[in-house]
Length: 100
Image (cartoon, one colour):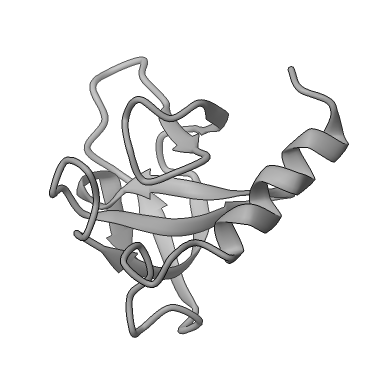
């Protein structure tokens, strides 16, 4: 696991991400439940909206996340959401997030 200061710096950099990665609805708080994962799997929360980006943590099935907007302006064209789980702030695939 990385040093907490390194994680904090990475999270701060994401907040300053270029406009191409940000969506107009960022800042609007949503609550999501993790759903649709394969049995025994967890949802990776990543540093950037890309499956190749390092994972910051894992959300369990039925876990509850705060969301701050979603975008499909990503390297893969898939939709990712800015989320928070406890102290972890990062990106998760929208496919596995169900609004509460």
